Image 1 (cartoon, chains in turn cyan, orange):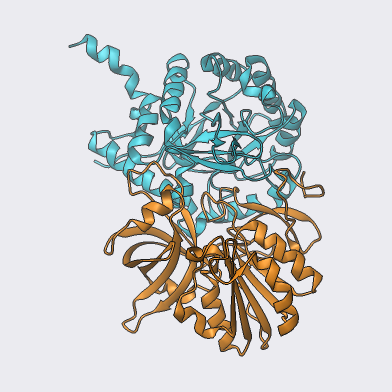
Image 2: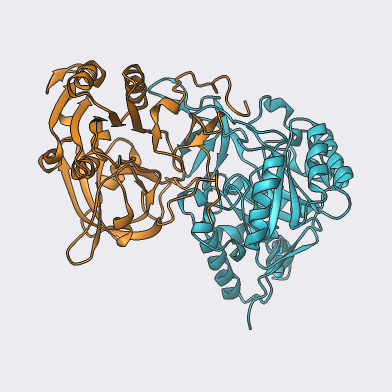
Amino acid sequence: MSLDFSTSLAGRRFPNPIFTASGCAGSGKELSQFFDLTDLGAIVTKSIMIKPRSGRATPRMAETPSGMLNSIGLQGPGIDLFLENDIPWLRDQGARIIVSIAGESVEDYAVLARKLRHVSGISALEVNISCPNVENRGQVFACDPATAADAISTVRRNIGGELPIIAKLSPDVTDIVSIATSVVSAGADGLALINTLLGMVIDTSSMRPKLSQKTGGLSGPAIRPVAVRAIYQVHAALPKVPILGMGGVACGRDALELVLAGASAVSVGTATFGDPTASIRVKNELEVLCEQRGFNSFSDLVGYAHRAEEANEHE
Amino acid sequence: MAREGWAMINPKAEQITSEILSNKKVGSYNHMVFAVTDLAAHARPGNFVAIAVGGPASSMVLRRAFAIYRSSIRADGQGLLELVVAASGAGSTWLTSQKVGDTVDLIAPLGTSFGIPTEPVRSLLIGGGYGSAPLFALAETLKARGCRVDMVLGASTAAKIYAPLEGKRSVSSLTITTDDGSAGVQGRVSDVIPRIIKDNDVEIIYSCGPMAMLEAITKIADSFDVLHQCSVEESMACGIGVCMTCVLPVLQDDGTIRMTRTCIDGPVMDGSKVTWTTSREIPEGVWGK
């Protein structure tokens, strides 16, 4: 029997559950030289802001054990050029598109949502309220249930009823379940878990922080257990809310781990930097692992790790 | 398919598993030869390769970028890429410790290449440390076009000068500088190049090496009103244009200065268009600051 590898996320259907991760695939153009973008469930574009943005000064990157720090600072062309150039190109490729947006204020999110509401060919909106590389880390929306809800409800009001909203949350919080509950109440149809963790590397030769802006977001396999934990906790609390999981997925086994924790789809991010075809390899490996475990439908594996206590009771 | 204003990866770039055919210590460096496909025929001086390091269970998640020293197709049709690798960090140390017959995952050719003039010109090639690597193939190409080629190589000490005999054949003159005076002229490349520019009436400078050296050469090139193509060295995570870590502020054709990917729009850039800075801040006037 063949496996039904399709998945549903925030009310939309995708032919398979492996996506790119925001900020790790540009708008797909570069990766299209290595594989057909339609082979992935969806392309999640780099978080776009209202205006062109230079990002932060270099050094912006430091490799760490099984991971890396980045402080790109949301470099990008701004929403107008993005809609003019990137979206039509992605649509021409036939790719399923999830647009990621980021703002510095609640009003920014309103403007971005209004610009996107009538754009055709978009499957969902990822609302990045958790980028650590903003001027004032204290104002990351996703660090407080009220401000997180404020940003999400603003997008909900301005986007109209059609386009699903996926709220991207930070693991750098005391209680991620309370943030998740808050943004779902505010109108999020799904959750993206997790963004990078804030970190720092000090260069012991120069004896000062390696990154120009001192701190950066930690990604890569080093953070995978944090992602698994966050997804597991949120899925346990909100089992009906679909989760797009990400955090250090480098192979099919890693993706399966996030799925078992409760992710309905999985984004491959940092692994793409080391291997342009990582997402395709993860997809193929995950499909084999699902079949090997005797499942006919991928969706039956979502959150399967949560059954553990129940199974033990029957022993 | 490629659109105007949207730079692309070299369309001939391939990701392949490549066997190491040779790995020899030369001074402070390793000269390594890799078996590749006919992508070797499309590699130009200035292009680079991105190699995965540490093996499948490695904790090093990012590729390492190396300028191509030489590329060729052997008589039997086998494509070859040659690199000069300095074992500086854990990744390059791993690579230089690989044995003949071992394989690596590499992507090549990547990035821009040195522009070759259509008319014979008087050129000066300047390399810092292993930055000399891409200059020898460039010298051959220029020589074949009838260009005069003078070369200056600088390093901290003699062992860090990479100047193989066969590489010197295309060069009219070779000047070496070392900080410690252990070879050639004691001092820096910037101490000797004004005289060479004047003596030989140099029309174009090609350079590769540390950023501070490239900045110093840019100032000299500008003062003599000489063209300057430099291969920059900004640390990269991916090498294929998606990570946005390897950016520099570069003047664009539309008059704006933008944070520009050196893996796609570089590594070879027009030195006079780069806003050289060591301030760890985005310079004033950059688009989107």
